[in-house]
Every structure is written in C-alpha cells, then in structure tokens.
Image (cartoon, rainbow, N blue to C red):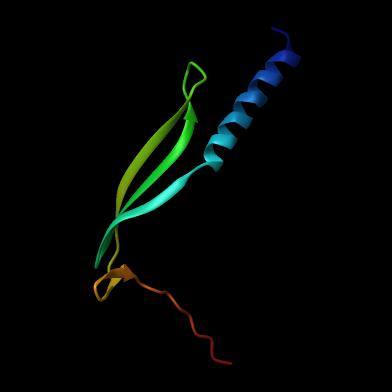
Length: 84
C-alpha cells in the first residue's frame, strides 16, 4: 500500500466516524431532585463495516439539578441577571 492510498484509507475512516458521531441522540430517562439518568445513542461502524447503535447511560448527580413542577420533576433553569 503506498502513501497516497494509506492517506485515503485513514481519511475515509475519519469521515465515517465523524458522520456516525453526528447521528447522536441524547435523552433524559429519569429525573430526581438532585439527579437525572441520561442515555446517549449513537451510530458506529463495526469491524465488518456495518452501522450499529451504541448505547451509553449515566447518572448525573448535582445538588438542585431539578425542581418539582406538578405533576413531575422538571429541569432547573439557570438564569443570570446583570445589573447595570
């Protein structure tokens, strides 16, 4: 394999990964007053060149992350106020 075809191969792989990363979906599955469970689903290419879905789930912990807004917990709004 010469340098030019190696370069095309590497650029092709990078472009494939960039396109797969662009198709990412993030969803909040569960909310609590100080936590939320977040799930990210993204497309990736496996060793055989097939597109597969990759699922990652994590729990975000933060004091005062969400607030109660009947009948459910809603995200807290962070607002800054500038006084002139």
